[in-house]
Length: 235
Ligand SMILES: *[C@@H]1O[C@H](CO)[C@@H](O)[C@H](O)[C@H]1NC(C)=O
Image 1 (cartoon, helix red, strand yellow):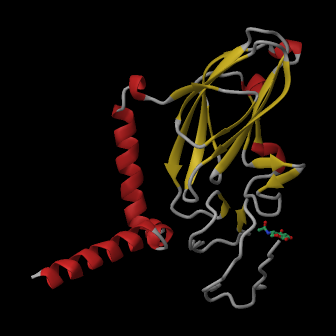
Image 2 (cartoon, helix red, strand yellow):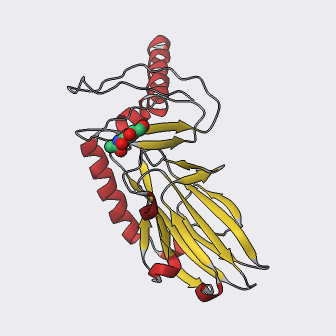
C-alpha cells in the first residue's frame, strides 16, 4: 500500500516537472490549442472590469512585463525616456493610448517602436523584421488619436518619449496576445527549451537571449526546401 502511494507521488512529481519545464513551449506551439486559448483569453478580457486591471506609474527609464495600465507624469522636463515592454516568447504586445496630455507642437513626442533598441542595435534587425524600419515607429503626434492601439510583431516593444513641461502626462494600456507562430523572440529566461515553427513562410527568424548562456540545438529542420542555407549564428 505504501509502495503504491510512493509510486503515485513520484509519477505526480514527474508530470509536474514535465509540465513546468521543457514541454512548455512545445505545447504552446500547438496551433488549435493556441487559437482556443487566444479566443478564450480575449473573451475573458472583455469581461474583466477596468477596476481589476493592474495599474502603476511609469518611470522615465522602465521595464514592463505585465499587462495593465501605466501612467507617466512629468515632475520635471524629461528629454530622453524609454520604456521596454516584454511578453512571453509566444506573445505579442499591444499598446493603446488612454489619455495623452503632451505638447506636440512644442517638441514633445511619444513613439511606439515595434521591437527594442539597445545600445544602438535594433531587435529584431531590419533583415529579420517583416516591416520596413520606418513603419516600425508609430508616433503619437502624427497619428494623434487616443484609443488607437499599436501591435508589436514579436514579444517585445518599446515606447520612447520626450516631454518639456512638468505636469505633462499620458496613460497607456498594455495587453498581451497569443502569437501561434513566433518568429523573432527575445527570451527573458536563463534556461529552458524552445521550439520555433515557421510554417510556409520565407522569412528570417531569430531567437535572442539576453543572458550569457550555453546553447544546445537539438533539432533543426528546414522542411522540403533543402536549397536554403542552414545558417545558425551564435553570438
Ligand atoms: C534575410 O536576411 C538576409 C541577410 O541576412 C537578407 O539579405 C534577406 O533579404 C532577408 N530575407 C528576408 C525575406 O527578409
